[in-house]
Image 1 (cartoon, rainbow over the protein chains, first blue to last red):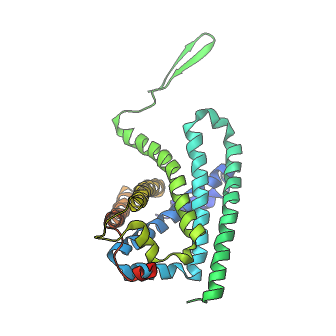
Image 2 (cartoon, rainbow over the protein chains, first blue to last red):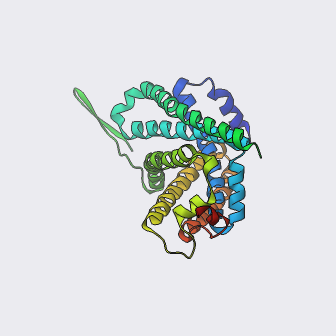
Image 3 (tube, helix red, strand yellow):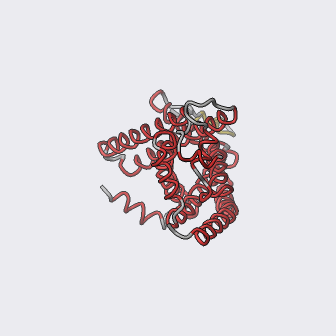
Length: 136
Length: 153
């Protein structure tokens, strides 16, 4: 049952270049975002149904482990958004189909441009919070 | 079926783009993934940058949610209706986009075992339906009155 997964893991790294690696990353980041999405919708709906549970969720959001996970989430979300935009634009505009390689490169460049300040601000705010408030 | 007619000097290819009924749904979902994805780029990134970066996760309090959603049983302002609509649209698009993404991944790895694939999708769709119905209900009701209110004063 797991053999297709193992084949994917092994072959993905040596199949056909940047487009293929972005395809794989698009899957992994999408699954990462969807898992957080589920827990996030549940946690936020508790603001209506169970305020103490909602506030417990907010407290978890303010722990170092979550802060690190949140930076991973930022990376997943921003990459998935930028790369998804590339996929949507290219697939809906056949006239651009000879620009695939340039597009994959820009996909990575724009992701990094958006991600760098995002991570910097998040890390700065997290660290200064833990320095002043301590770790609970 | 695609047909090719060859005339001297040029090739004309006639492609029938949409196979009959069975794959209409797949085509619709394929298009939905592109358009919902483009909408979510703006919705999800604006939400993430606003809450997790600009405000900062460590500054998020229950009181903020009560301000944006309004409180159950109390009159709702126009701004609160706009916030609730923004979250509801994002929730529906994101959950649908996410389920269909999971479906494609599940089909790729477990499609050759229909029982596993179907079972997995029933679980995924079931959990997603429960969570998102809860989310929509919460947005209709507004936040509970409670401890957070003290921070508003």
